[in-house]
Length: 243
Image (cartoon, rainbow, N blue to C red; front, side, top):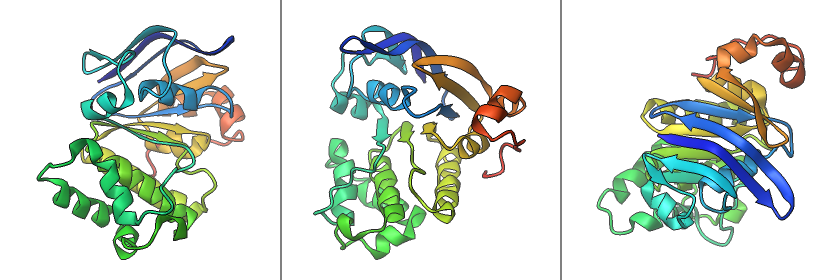
């Protein structure tokens, strides 16, 4: 579905992404882990068209994305849930969700899609008339995910969805992400919470200073002592626990 080949991204003279090769197959749940500053967010921003690559190929279902504007990429079926949520605080929950479907405005399925989001996140239905700025951090993250899903994506990009949230909220989001994937949406998850990422994803890439240094099944990476020491505090981990 998604294939990055020898992708390079620059910020001025800074080589932020270096010859990255990455793929997400249809229906897959793939994670990208790495330390803060490794280039994970830059990679997602490049996929969604917010940042242009310097070199390499970036293809989605056969279409080259590197020259397309973000709205065209959304229309192809990629939704990006950004780090920091970035909800519109002065607008209601429902208005935020409907703006997520802007590229599909006029679609007859929007009422059904909105009902699905409320089924996934009942708190959003309870608070649909509240302004987004009055929600808790966890509720705002639910809103950001719901807004991305209103674009009816084939591929959902999630950037640090657990950042700053209470463990009970993180567990709830993990269950939601598994559900979304099992219902057919492919997911590329960027996370500093390696424990969460490795439990959810079937395959994982490790990014360090802009380069992919390891890749494989999550089960294989969990068994790698260097991954356990660097990202799991030396502890063993059973994958698939959140599914």
